Length: 202
Image (cartoon, rainbow, N blue to C red; front, side, top):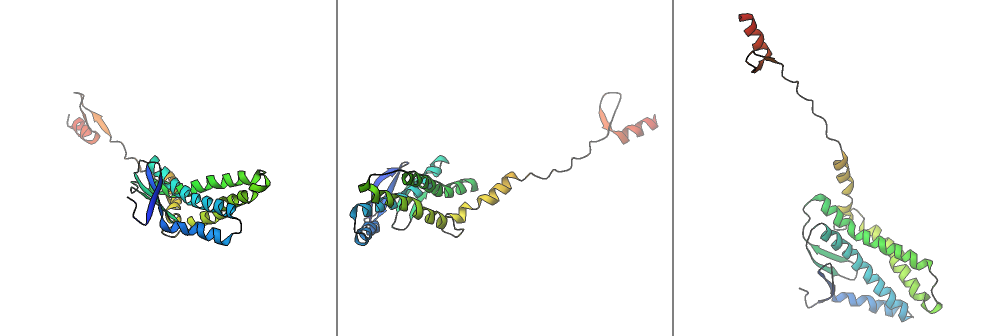
């Protein structure tokens, strides 16, 4: 349940998306530092959607792996996907890459938006979207993939060792030499040495 200092705006993949009250600082700073309110609001919404998309990527991969997602928490500078603990190393690695995967989709969308020709009044909004989902997005991807806890890279780059272990061929154990057997007249199988001793006695 959201606390008094936060509110749940909507749900994604069955989990509530909970915004902390400090998120309100982002549009205030954007409006104060910008002369044009329209691109400021567009950039603020795009920036917050970038954080939501990152956590939604984690949540989507977690659900695909059968893990329960409790909530998605959104803060001014980062987010948190609260989900059930992964049962295998492969699941943990996949969930870690889910956030960056969602950001890459937004990066592709930013490229598509930048290649379009918008009408002159909407160009500032177009620029705000391209900056938020393009340049800023690339910066956060690089930061998230840093191999330092608690960033995603600390778990995501374990995929290299996981791949090596998965594709490494197990060493073949030498097969034991087949036992040398002889055959008695009654059809029972006996050791060859015992068979020879029986023949000498007879």
